[in-house]
Amino acid sequence: MTRQLPRRPGLLVTDGAAKVLGVNADTVTHWTARALCGEVGADEWFPEKGGSVREAKAVCRQCPVRPECLDHALANDERFGVWGGLSWPQRRDLKRQAAA
Ligand code: SF4
Image 1 (spheres, protein in one colour):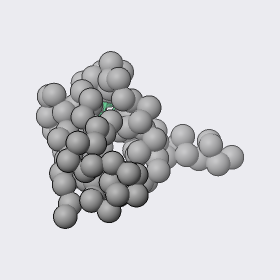
Image 2: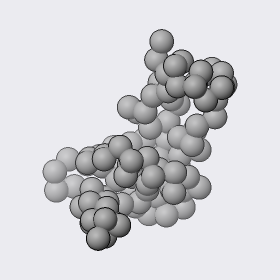
Image 3: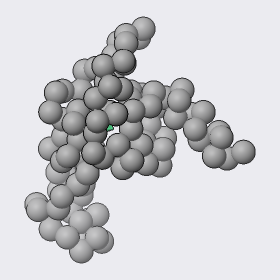
């Protein structure tokens, strides 16, 4: 069975993953539970083409789980939306710099 985490849509934890981690999937605390974007909705993080992400990035700068969020986006090659305060082009550049 797959469970939807309480904040960012699309992020899932499975019973299998919880078993590997030795935790109860019903009670595991995930960084997404402290995500500020979960408090205000995700629309600004995934705008229509040409839309501004300025407000989303401003919220990200105050977010207590920004490092975890950015790590997740880099590890999973997230190509859409703002994660960890960075847009996809910024994350792509960061990955290129890290690989150089
Ligand atoms: S850093 Fe930004 S996108 Fe990531 S969880 Fe925090 S508010 Fe959401």
